[in-house]
Image 1 (spheres, rainbow, N blue to C red):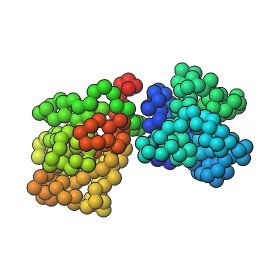
Image 2: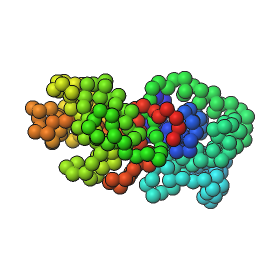
Image 3: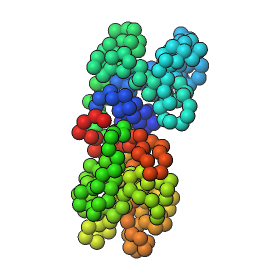
Image 4: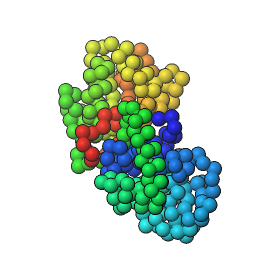
Length: 291
């Protein structure tokens, strides 16, 4: 969505899922972010430092912070939205998560009008947010979404000889196998996989063609962000994928490039210790029901 910077869109969608705001909850957060600071692009006082012109509020979501005292809505509802150990009203992830938490306390998602009115006591403001949210929903196409961890974690991927993945990415994995004619050769596990990667979280796949046609893996690699220019260092993935490792990256690629041929795709996720479940994961295919 060109109007919303990627880090802000991620913050809106992550917070919406974290606070169970429903399928379209992100659009209301995005509408508030647009109106309050143009998603952090505004140079008005209080957006990036200090207080706004009224002296009451600060940050990209213009959250009331007790006229700079750290109290108010910020003091009561502040959240470390990106798990970096800090709560910073000027940090988009923290500000958006705090706004989401306050909206829930004020009636969302059951009554968005009441919740938004609590955020700013003006009917014209509520109408403006609702209209902007509708614009974002209407203009959004298929997209990834963060999924908060549920009760399940590792499950066997059907037809993959017992290979297990984080349950939240299994629909994505099955879609990849079907779409590109691939077979899953590894997902969850330790050595020889790096312990600081996604395999120990069940959030990485090693993929090979079902029929020996390595053009299939090359097509999949290119579809999700691989190119020769970034290959040696690992290519940043598109959509929910964190990294794509293929020809040019040591130990990865087709048989002409490595003795251990495979394509590696891993998913974006919250920080997590090896062999534990990440708190959230971004996926290609949203779950059938909120988690």
